[in-house]
Image 1 (cartoon, rainbow, N blue to C red):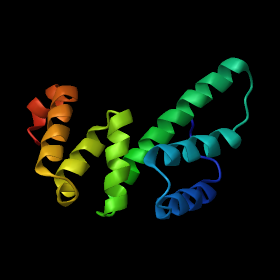
Image 2 (cartoon, helix red, strand yellow):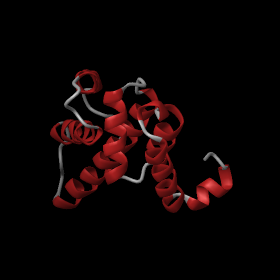
Image 3 (spheres, rainbow, N blue to C red):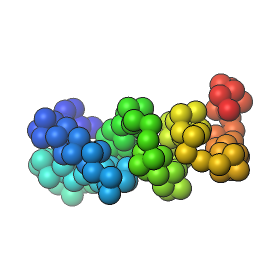
Image 4 (cartoon, rainbow, N blue to C red):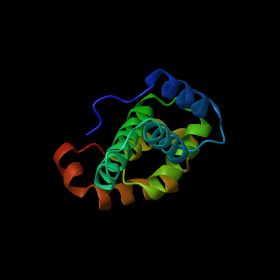
Length: 131
């Protein structure tokens, strides 16, 4: 487990610049986080390297989940979320796009996203009844 992300201020700056760049996707931001963490780690063995890579991916996924909460509501971030939910089953991304970005999609698109989310997250939706 990674106790502390090395050079966090540098990483925060990279992520802020990536969020401001409309060509950067949430997946590419996740990769920026992974690359930063891995570049700043030392490995004792191959097993240690594999474990730290796994931890870096987990940290990056969690970092993107936090970013999703803070995204401004605009067309660029709508496209980012729409692309992200095609590749990742992120409950937060589905919830955010459905609840906050409805002005950027047709009713048909919204219903398709809700339908896909229900299939993926059926147990959670039954428990929380968000959609």
